Length: 124
View 1 (cartoon, rainbow, N blue to C red):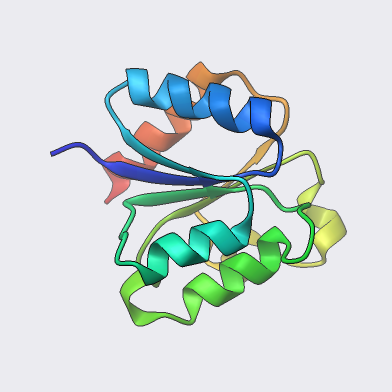
View 2 (tube, rainbow, N blue to C red):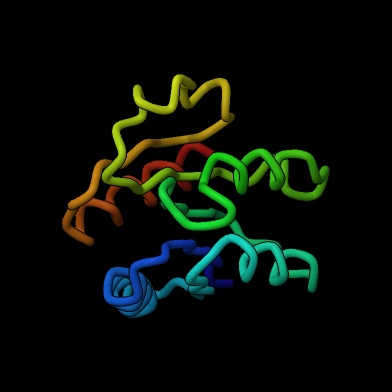
């Protein structure tokens, strides 16, 4: 069974390119342009094996999205990767406080992102 990755990013080109790349690598990808769409997918029963999210997004930012996901028991175990141009130290939180598996700084080549994803899945 293919692993499902939920990607949340408000940059359409980046979202499409990363989604296409990961799909070609055999993952089932659910691409959402905002956290609201991602939450709607989760509410509809989508249970991803991994979530990749940007931080800087309108209305609901990535930190708020992560906090909301972590309040739902069914999603507490899901690894979350932050993929953002915003330095993590500017958020005044740490990956451990957010229960986040990895922080990846944009820009990052898709093959490097794939390497991180595979490392996370191997640790499970």
